[in-house]
Image (cartoon, rainbow, N blue to C red; front, side, top):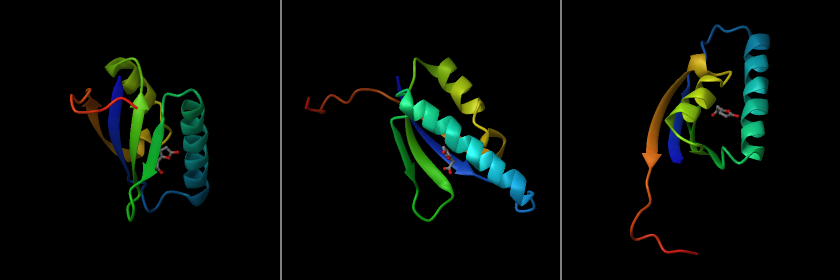
Length: 93
Ligand SMILES: O=C(O)CC1=CCC(=O)O1
């Protein structure tokens, strides 16, 4: 199943800079592993915001929740999920 996911990062401004750098490095490694596995095929920065639009390709809601809740930044993000269904006007390419 495909999901459109919006992630808004809300790191506390007083977070220790070393802790901040560590979380961001772990987030990058985690997301890049999932990208290589094909589970995170699209990752876009929302221009002007500390936020992203992502497409995740997973088995269903339970895997999506497991994946998202494992994000190192999960405690510091607001996340909005939209399940995607096939559109009848979409042409095959
Ligand atoms: O948008 C961000 O910076 C948060 C994030 C999600 C995956 C990643 O590598 O960073």
